[in-house]
Length: 173
Image (cartoon, rainbow, N blue to C red):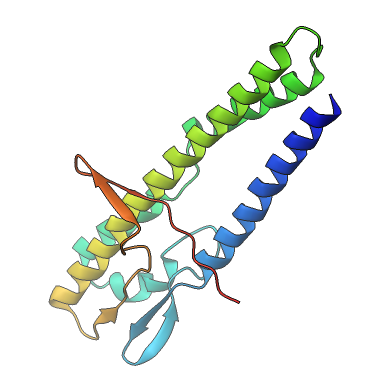
């Protein structure tokens, strides 16, 4: 029972530490507009809002930015999957250890959480295309040009039947 509890605690600590590091990276994305650095994500609730002032001049680019921001909102499906995974883990921790079901519940919960994480990261990565399309559409017809190159578009991305999967982590000290 104690070993299972220790594994669950380490797992949740890993999740919380990872979420904090993603938040830091999101807030530090910069674009260069007219030789000035502009924060793309100037608050945690609306990603891409720092570009709205410029992109609002172009209706096509604005529609892509709106689509991008709609895609960054919390999804009910991923929330439900996260709740189910967490519930399975807690049920496994609280169940009778002599039956052997607790191990299956814990590993089932961890599996659901891992699948949920991968689905969420892939959807977020796919949604970044809408931000790039918004910037490209703006740059076609407007001045000053927005210069932005996301770091995630590198050799760590993989394409499987037209679906790009990106799971990258950058470290800076």
